[in-house]
Length: 216
Image 1 (cartoon, helix red, strand yellow):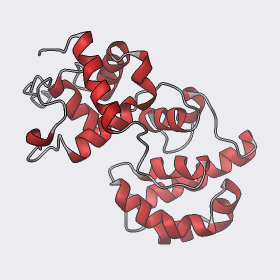
Image 2: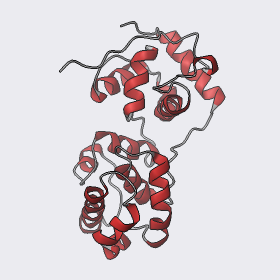
Image 3: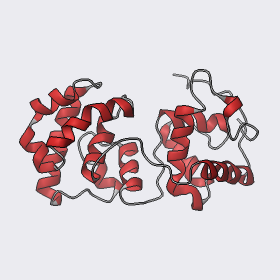
Image 4: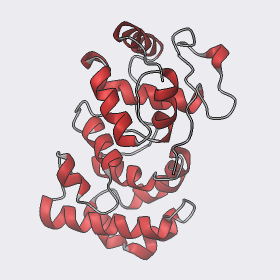
């Protein structure tokens, strides 16, 4: 596959920056704990669906202690509209208990500790580290996995491969917002079906690599 030069990668992110100087997560959360919960709930579910389910939930439980008091069954009732809600409700209760018992209800600031929490994988940990602690991490979701090799920003066929490639190639001055720009680009412009190339701000830079699904 072809990869963009360093100069063209900088130009890609300069254009993203010009169009959207301060991108942010589309998950609606009143605090860091709720953001963590929302990202856990967002696995295989759209942000829109998560926001719809959590809006009433966070009105009654927005701290680990309140989630524990609410309990798994009532949490399930709030989030039953989203996928895998039974497992996710259990994860929310378990991670809330661990935060209360081991971390004074604070959100850990290292990937290793975050990934030890129930329901928290590498992508979720990277989101929390970036949004809460302003670390230059690169959470790779299905959008980034699809569009970054296609554009020529990164190589790889797994989230970890694409993450490492992006970390090596994206200039440091863009890293804080890079994953937000890429997620929004994949969600609204470079869509999986019928990509809006005519409206794309980087169409002249995109290498349009044909990405085949990984062989089994």
